[in-house]
Length: 345
Image (tube, rainbow, N blue to C red):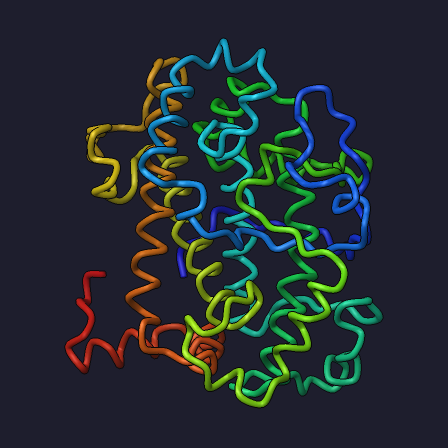
């Protein structure tokens, strides 16, 4: 669990069919019109890095970050997951998800009554008896809580990038924590963008109709919690949620470090050709390589988070992942005692 940048109040909204995008700067998410208009669920940061950050694609994406003035005038730039506006949206999502995870761990997360997604637990919320164990009920509740807050998180991420050029996004991405906090906490209800932007869509996922219903029902199958982590593909299964929370923690820490003047982490081996000196200062916003450097840092941390999580949960069941969400550290300690994981990973 990494240090949080600042407090971000969640926008508590259960979105049933978001509006279409009216921004002239940001094209709509690459989904069918039916999907965008249908009742759907948002899943923040619930994406497989391998789907968007292969070495070949990374090279293609990074080359295009080297000319932000040209990118500013091209709608195509918002379809690049390593452009500044996409990274800014990912960073904002990571900050909020990391905070959410911290509040889950400390049992301080606000849970409203009478919502579509969490209403079945109203009695438990009122009596303070919400499950925090390895039960099916606990798995269902944490998935619903994640989906519920993802709507607000996605709204904030879409709002922060709405109408911005890539140059404006890199300036905010490289500013400081006070500037970012004021920008986000200064949002007013009338400012909120409930549409799907291409820039904010790269690190989120949408579930539509029957798919969502099936995934929630799957959490109550008798053998689901005893299943190995890679036997369940659902993005709301405990091991998938653990992966998402761990990614949010890593990206939150990386961006917090950047906003305080230092680079974070090491360049992933697959990206070494970009030869960034990680002990150097954060680049000036006017440095022509600033967008390329930020792309490499974010991509490296995304790939490292995925790789280390794979190692962490390689022998885990869904139940063990569920317990790890509420009480992080147990799986790592077990693997270290067994000599299967380095304390430095």
